Length: 69
Image 1: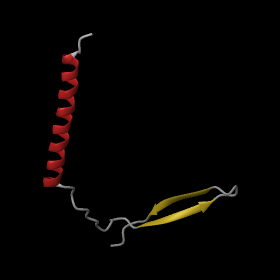
Image 2 (image 1 turned 180 degrees about the horizontal axis):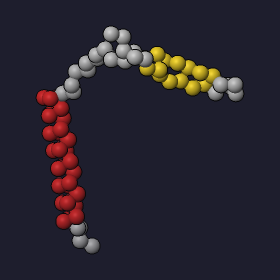
Image 3 (image 1 turned 135 degrees about the vertical axis):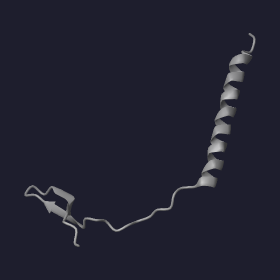
Image 4 (image 1 turned 90 degrees about the horizontal axis):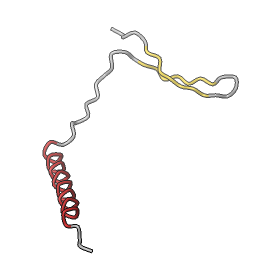
């Protein structure tokens, strides 16, 4: 039974292409890098609230108030 060389070549070329793309992405990521996280003050102050109902189900959320000028 002969070895199917074209199918093996497609698999090897696909694996090589995936390695090239992954390597290029890693090099680009090192050059560009992630953006720095900048935290700014929000315009609307919030207050975290937690509520427990009569059947002991706890729920939480945020209440936003008008901005203090």
